Length: 117
Image 1 (cartoon, rainbow, N blue to C red):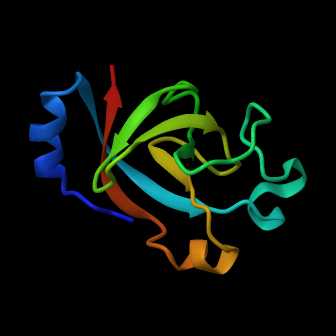
Image 2 (image 1 turned 30 degrees about the horizontal axis):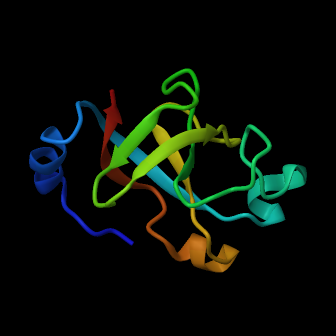
């Protein structure tokens, strides 16, 4: 899923829209299963179905509805969820895969993050 590197991102996106570098965040991944979402089901913090591009954040660090660019991904993510255990500079990224596949992803990697302003 990761398609571009951080150095190229700064050069490319700087010409398209303004970005604010936020630093490195710990990235984890979750799916739509009951283990990941509990009794809430496969919905984000607004009650909408989970979609690729949804991330859970600590709203004390990143307000909900913040648009983000994450190192290595060729798309924009939106903070639409607040997962349990998401604290500080931590982003939990929804991925449309099985639970076992989500757990096999690089849990806890640190990636550079930019806010779209």
